[in-house]
Image (tube, rainbow, N blue to C red; front, side):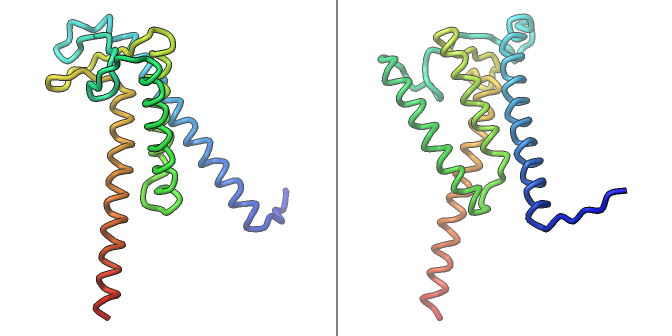
Length: 165
């Protein structure tokens, strides 16, 4: 029988390590699902919502004429978004899972661009084609934007309340 003489900091450290491991596992799972579905889409093209295609554009159909500019924009936009999401997580405005989900989405499409020179899209949603990485990025972006809008709205409400009193 062992007796724990741990203090609260040691317990928090273990909890933080478990949370970090869970977030890393989530990122790995999203990336794995993205890569497997991209591969499998070629074998499932008989399904109505599956239509594999090469996407040489950036997200949302942004045309790419200069590959160096495309890489710079991709990395710059992702970096800025990741920094904003990190700030929102630290403030408690957005859930921590947003970071690994967004990072896995970025990495899934980045791996495609590095290996193939384009992104493999396959999921037909309306007039556009997506993949799991795109959906992960969209969710992370939407959650971060919603948290930012809420934070700004709350700050304006607090300022208004302060003026009235």
